[in-house]
Length: 294
Ligand code: SF4
Image (cartoon, rainbow, N blue to C red; front, side, top):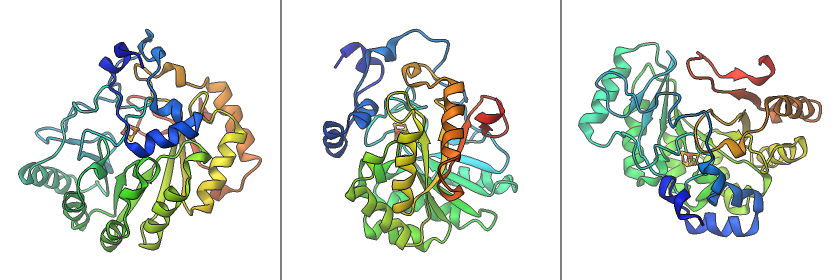
């Protein structure tokens, strides 16, 4: 493991991730540092201005009028090498105190168009249950909020974290959806499927936001295996993202024409329920842009 790479982008992996990486080369590419992360490219560490906060509101970001993102933690169970926030992990401004949380709630109440609150990070599930629920209850208690989205890779990288107790707490709120990330079918281990099942049985819908990654899942065959495995686990394949324009991940980026071809092939071979939207995030755009429009 190159110390130059890990000095810039730290290696973090829990025991479960290390074990899965040892069995699955496609997952290992997401965990293990690669010297190509230091190659020069045209990108910066934060193209979406995620370090900028909404005025006076520590840990809250707003890019779209109906949604806000709350940074509830700045660390993860493992540092995904392709992460959009790889330059910000363990450095991001996050909400911690009751006062900061109150300020974020006041911001949402001052912006009545906001209906969807994303609790993200880092991974919010590195926090203990009572901390997670402090965020969930605060926002699900606001009448204007329809959806509280918990953005976590725990079902994939630390499935034991999704206990039945936690799932029941999340389900009781009535507004929580879990957004997770699986990138290849091998990640749907029996433990991961059990984690998803705990959530679904507790009434928490689970959606998957996959990242299209060279050498991991950049073919229709690989993605279709994944989508079918997700459907078996009752997880909705929701988005496939082109890699974001950030520094340090160029070796994962799939050329646009190839991504468009993969999307067309998938669409011809799986029904709508199993077919996510293939999109890319463009700095300044007011929506996720379908790659077919590019
Ligand atoms: S879990 Fe999400 S936020 Fe954390 S390193 Fe992976 S992609 Fe980034």
